[in-house]
Image (cartoon, rainbow, N blue to C red; front, side, top):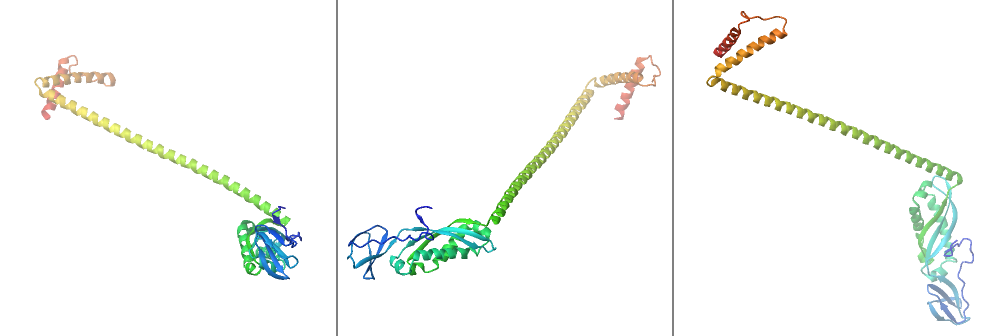
Length: 311
């Protein structure tokens, strides 16, 4: 146990011994000497050198004005859900009025310790077992508030500064159950984290496939558009070329000698057509005078003339 934490529940010799009056007293800082003269309160000696009348004046009480930490021994209390647990703590107090601390109660510090113990059991009965671990700060605040609701400062000259719970010890069976519950909670959190990770991975894979399908469809669409545009451009270019060729042919026909050249070209194509038909087909086409090439040319020219006349 720490030397600056005093256990007033087991140590009966906790009071500061009063000095013998030899007439001269050296009072330490933050220490109050309560002096009585012939059994009646007279004064409080100031820190430093002080003179008293031997055998007439007597230092009856000595109090430390420093903040003191008092160890509150383990107390068994029953929670709101009927679970008996043991709890101890540390109470921090300070004497603010040495006169009241001397004459207000027979043993004010012991009285404060007893008050803290009973208050701790009372406040423990207002909460459940789980709350004692989850809301320890709130429990400390409630115990201190309940202690300070008593007129300690005006009656005993003591001020309670704060209260801190040291240990909370549940029964062995309850402790085993709590350990199992904590282990189950940890496993549950681990499973939840694993499932969340798997779900996120599945979502990411699905998003990736979705984006791939979208990009692929967009690429196919763009490819079709480009192909259609290319084919349209090709058809348009071919049409323009054909139109220009026809225009050039028409212009050439209208020039001097163009008609004769055209007739000659048609005659040549007519002869070539007869040759191809005779090579490919099973039926042989024979003109009236197959040996007369001039008659073939004449027939071709006649056909051209008729077409020109009809136009």
